Image (cartoon, rainbow, N blue to C red; front, top):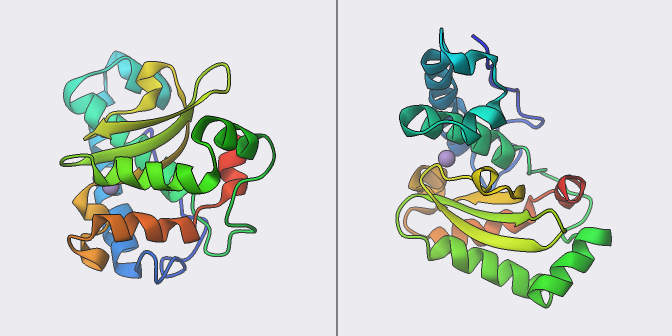
Length: 192
Ligand code: MN
């Protein structure tokens, strides 16, 4: 098995009440585990075995792309959170870029949640930067990733129903807005 699921850097119930222990157990423990198991099975004995995960995402399609990208996306998502982040807004260079490209941090948060709420069906909403540091909001259907457009992902919210249905049922906007309480902006700044 080439890829192993990394242990989360917090307890399964540590993100409550924003994300319940039950959701972490199903979403990370079962959904993400299945993507990683499928990825390992699909690359076994193929040319993809020697590529790193981001390379596989850039050079595959179909079931392999879907499982590789979902494996990457969920690690990126779950490793953006902290039960007790040091601050609830970005500072420094990232903050200046957000103010420049979205008008203000409040406007950015609104636009991000709106993009996530407006995505029909399953997918991800992304904040990414290009090679010049300019910020972009994108919607990705299903397993789509900014990595395939040459962007550097900074933050993502999962808008698949499995991400929030146990805790919020059909209230996707509430589920997304609640996530602002646990985003670790130090991690997002480091990615920028
Ligand atoms: Mn998910």
